Length: 280
Image 1 (tube, rainbow, N blue to C red):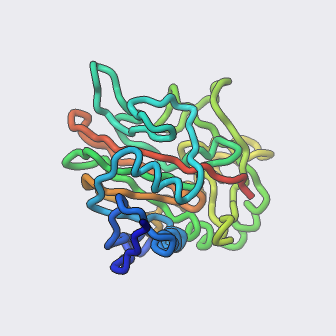
Image 2: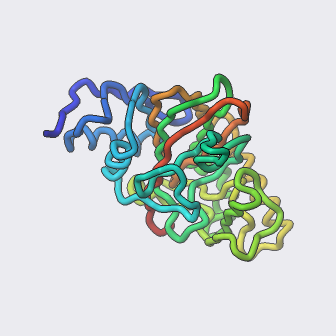
């Protein structure tokens, strides 16, 4: 039986983006009306947070499917038993990592932007977190685009950029070269969100290698300017994780990054990624 949540409330997390949703237990079979309110909050706020959750793999997987089909990765499935679920973790079992992206700082990026159909959204459920650090920063790419000078908007309108993920060598920081086997795709520098119809910058420091059709030095200068603009604190919400957090972001209009933390402390978050649509 579906559960209607009458006490659902939405509270902003920052001036830049993000909202906390209160009064919902994601283990419940949420009514269509309740889910519609959650979905609306996601589109309005770009990032949504539900604290104090206690989901197993299947419960998180089923909640994710309410938003659409899940996207597999080129990264192998590790500890997970549920298709489409992976762990972001530095925890080891029998001396081997059970998850991906175990340690260290990670530059701003948008998940799976190196694919023809980049992820529409990503959800993390925090299971174990270090006492300090390992925070996730989210940048509002709507506002980043909207605050560009008009001449820059005209300059980048219609441009496309090559996105690449060199997972084996540079999973957390931008590399210098593009390996022959690295997944790549060309997308517009500015994309239009398929639901909100708002424009957002769609280049990022970790995975955008160059702007097509420009000399490398000109491409580098333009990209550096855009990266620095996106990463201004006025556009950013920094999330400090607590065990039980479920946090979901829209990859079509945000970028995210990770701060460093003590690698001797356990960090484990369960991740699902939603399949997206072609970029335009």
